Image (cartoon, rainbow, N blue to C red):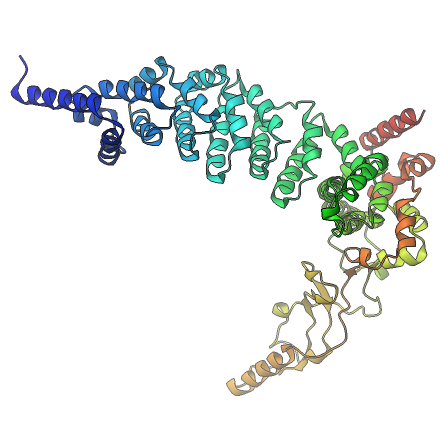
Amino acid sequence: MTSIKEQAAISRLLSFLQEWDNAGKVARSHILDKFIETNRGKTAPELEQEFSQGASLFLVRLTTSLRITYVTDSCLEKLLRSIGIFLSAVSSNRYLIEFLEVGGVLTLLEILGLEKIKEEAKKESIKLLQVIANSGRTYKELICESYGVRSIAEFLAKSKSEETQEEVQVLLDSLVHGNPKYQNQVYKGLIALLPCESPKAQQLSLQTIRTAQSIIGTTHPSIVDCVLKVLGTMHLEVQYEAIELIKDLVGYDVRQALLKGLVALLIPSVKETSKLQAKILSDPSVLQLAPSLPMFLQQAAAAKAIGVLARNDMSIAEELLYLHVVHGLMAAMGNMDHSNSQRLASLTLEVRTAASEGAGRAAAATVPPPPQSRRPARAAQCFVQMFPLVAEHVRKGMGEELYQLFLVSAPSDGDSDSVVPLHTVPILERSTCRVDLATSCRRDCSGLGSSTRHFPVPFPALSVRLPTRPPPATSLCQAQLQVQTALAPQPGPPCSCPQSNAEDLYMKLDSIQADILAANKVNITKALRLHGGSYSMNILYGSHDSAQMAYLTHFEKEDVESKE
């Protein structure tokens, strides 16, 4: 026998269910609003108590209504939110199984593919799929077996809402983790998204591919072409993610193909370039414009990516030399149709590598420099400084006048005074103190912004005579005031810190110099082969390394075979 309270609760439940069954669209919408407001965040036991142990009866009605009305978008968003309250509740495994048994996953995936349904409803569908995927490996496999990866990827490419696209990324990331059976399927689906027209979808796909790549551990052969094509985008956030992915991919088996592809992008095909130019000229609406061709965007992005890679890894810089990167960079510098290609190629040609700093420090630790050359070492070396043979051929390819414009102007060596930081000077222990400050110079004259390197600049005005004994407070205050006065900004000679002309070189080129660069015949690979692999080794490391020699010899042989 049931108690009076239980009978009353069952009566209320039956009355509620009957009200739902007899209600129309407007009435059901009000019922859903009240249910969402009063039951959001409740656990499964609390829901059962609310519905007198009959919550599944209402869930069945919700799923049935969803399957019948989702095509017409009638209260669809509220229906999905109500179902989400059941599925996301703590200890809701029973509700999840009931929803899946009636084909809930297929219904949610079909909603993503319907054009008439509003974006908000599709967003709620994605959230429900997230709840299902986060419930365990079995449910992730169920989504993938229902052709979910394809439906989700297509929706990501077509969605117009960035918030919804970010929710899709969360779902794809969940499907990659803890899903060994279908993680390769998700990985391939992400690669297939790269050529899509949505910049946000490209950005999110590239981010998720980096995660998937570290989980899978192997690469797909098509990823190189897809990533290189993405470099033709006009959106810098997408280009950034593409370069970050390239930095990861050079650690896998596609490294050589990727580097070859980047170098090839530095010299666009004449046939393709002329085809694009003819198409633009045939359109009278853009005759007065100077559009950036996709190939030129790729060229600029490739030059930037090459600079990033060479800066991070010395071995990549060496490998790029054997792939004729210097010839490609000089050709890009001569592209008068795209100034950004010229600028980025110039910066990459003189790229500073962090690896060379470590090599320089190691050499300095083993072999002390002669007294006349003991000066503060630079934080890094330029590409042409790192390989003297490159500098020699670049000079010949550019010509003396253009090469001088390209060079980095170094400070004069006339002043050999030692640099003493201000905080290390024992003020009260010396009768005469000359303070030389290490300052950073703002390179406003060349438009390069604030310099990140500190250079020693002597200030003769800071020769402050301080007493040897502790002075009275008034005398000490006067000495401090004198130092502060000397530290105040004062007019002086022009800045003498090292300044690079590479970034602004394209503004100084005339058409003849640009043609010289574009048609350069610099062949570093041939020169290295004539000098032998030990040539570059002696320059970089000062000693022979058998492993590195074998590494260089491999690329020399490959270059010879490709020419034969």
